[in-house]
Image (cartoon, rainbow, N blue to C red; front, side, top):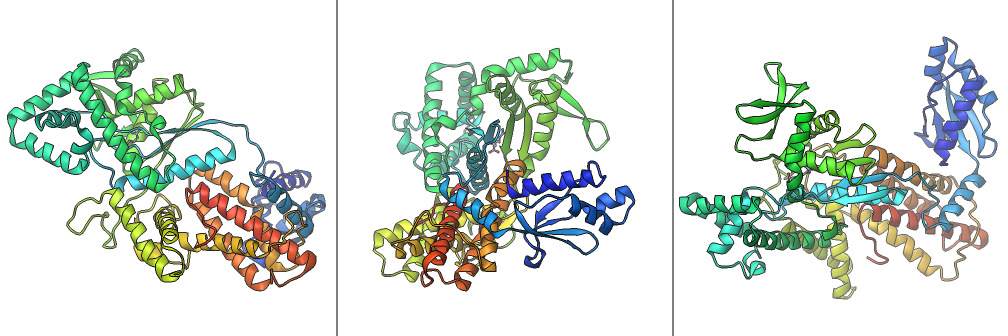
Length: 572
Ligand code: ARG
């Protein structure tokens, strides 16, 4: 159990003993150092419920509260807060346990089967900055949830089906490039643009493209082969981005829209049997009472068009059904642009009504805002084009290289390149992950590459500092006891025990910025400790203990940053 959970539990017991049933203790890390290490805020509300004096209730709670094994002092403050000062040796003991453990002392959980669906680009075009946030946020969530002990299934729900693929394959054939798709599609963006030009200018080509769509849908072997080539090449482009971005998605996680084709007629069938379908002008529609049109009528979601075609929602229903019936998931997390929130709300509602997903399978749309340029408009190139993701990442590495070369000209060039690539990519990722995902945010190279403030370089540097200290202390004893004397030392040590609470919070809320915020706080506390407490210059047991705290700080920073998909280096 974490310290927070332990205090919660003990205070609940004490509240019950003082005569309050079911009052939440509301325990938090203390907001100021003078309030101790944790504060209990729930007593005032409990007193209100009992209609008694909060300070008197606080006294009763303290009398019944047993924290002898972990706290050195519990004080009543203000109108009825409790301030808990933890015992230094208890904190030290938790630190010691974390240091000896690969998982930093995390308690095992009852594992759930959790799918994190993320990235999911459309394969007709190249990945652009619009796919960045889903890839970064989704990957961090997958890593964190997995580390905490759940069974994570990563899913890349790529858009690999639809009318565009008729046009694209027809263009491959027309330009006689079907035998060398790698070359033809080296620049997917240009290929798509040219195909579209042909489609718009030539009715004859457009007809052929439509014919290809029909052939594709009816499973024509030669057209399917072309389509597969196209999809394969496009996925190779995505993989280059994932690799550069250190995103843990591979071919094995791809399950595209096309894989649900055969299920779509079944979906229609099952919706009909469930009595959910209405025919409207030839189309099959589900009307949802909970969603209203402007005229206050139930909103309709089209499942199958008049011409027999299926829609985005139909495929998503197929995916949910598969995820329950075949994968038996407990929870599905969709990391997709917040602008799709209505789609997901409707999708989940239909799935529940049709029993494609029982209530026991949690469905969550984890949305995010738009990435903006400095002009406050959606991020574009100067000429107004969307920016290819791969180009953006190359620019990040380039800028970081200039930065690293100015700061550390003495390092060999290859090393500077390696550092620059880690710093540049980390800067882009951390700028995103450190903000509340629901807000739009402004993409700014200078602030994300700064070595000051809540940035990747600052945190990476804090880590390298721990490593350089440990390198210099050649004789350091990895089993030495941690002894906390100084107050900055103790604050750092307490923060180090909170890692598990933070991770659990992210698993529940799907807000990775809570982990970022924690790591920033940790780095700041470490640097205060480093300034206030001599490490290498101290002696004996004190020196050994401080080195142990340094080691645990490094290990926690490293683990936390890696969970955000960010690499650390021993030197930078
Ligand atoms: N391919 C879609 C797009 O680029 C995102 C897919 C999101 N996932 C889903 N299950 N609908 O907008």
